[in-house]
Image 1: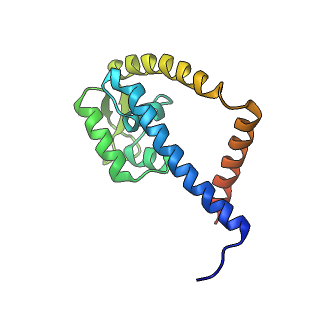
Image 2: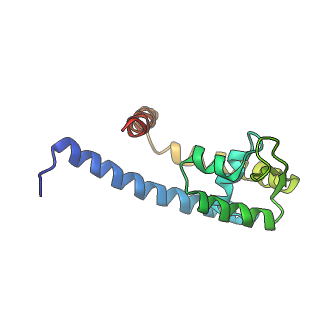
Image 3: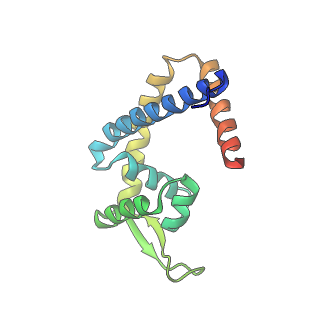
Length: 147
């Protein structure tokens, strides 16, 4: 097996940490959303739709998620009254998804909880470190898109 360079080894460790952090973020998201009867995955879908209606396929593509997973989440949100479908003038086979009043209320409640949680977490990490991490993750995203 070929030996990794030190840079490739460090990058592999970054990947592992990102996966671990993602798991922690999902667990924190589930804890934040539980009082309003949602999951972190459902919150992610609702948060995307805050900016306007979208199809499930577009949502999956723009968030880098599997379409089937998004569709399952959308179906649960439709069943529990958080989303509604409307006609899509661009493609009759792909309805637009819109937030309901119930979803907007949940998002307002979650917004307050998220701000408090984020302030608490961010206070424990130096701001310069957070800014460096953000720049690095954006750079990695761009490099990976090009690769």
